[in-house]
Image 1 (cartoon, rainbow, N blue to C red):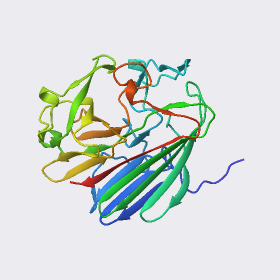
Image 2: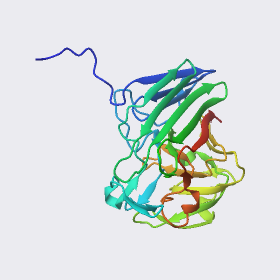
Image 3: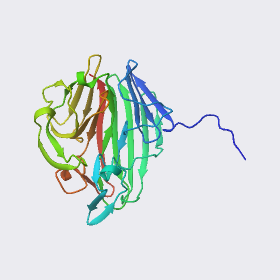
Length: 300
């Protein structure tokens, strides 16, 4: 027995478009992924089509932890947990649990889309975390509000990050303004934390300068102000990524094709669930507690 199908379902499900004041954005049903941000019709992101799947974590919401957890293993409240390994070559658990979930649509207007997903207990994750994401646009750009609540009966470790890439023809010509005074040194093989050190040398962009041949896959912290902004200025356009004090970390990644830069606001550094140089950034949510973080993008 066969049934007729009118249109294929896009890999990322429904596409929610919002627009105002020259800005527009597209957020997908699957993963609440930020697929597109445009200003006056110009695409700011290294994006993907509505009929395509994202690659390299394009626009991904990193919940309930950003970046890597060493061996997928951590201890919390005296209990050992083992997460699935999804970064196989480095044997890490990477970028949270938000893979393949169709988020519930709460509301969708011309200027705003609100989505919700409940992360239930699973392998390596002990609790129930309700996440509500609000994407909105106005004359000042895109604003994203991330509200999570521990709706279970056990305390939870928590971290958040997001993974947008910003497209340029040649990032060597892009001037980076990165007002962070500390960086995380990692081992070369697995990109796991070694120590937090003052920013020096080629990674110091506190005085704006062109990226040139600099290669970055680096987490930075200690912003110059609680409400920070990172600016990328190319020959044709500029963008600013901003965040509030709840996101004191940022990961900057220069893509291997030298045509995009990821600027990733984060609540904590890599491997924060484990003891080490980033552990003080882990957020502990008791039953019933919540956490709100806000970040955004605007033309610069």
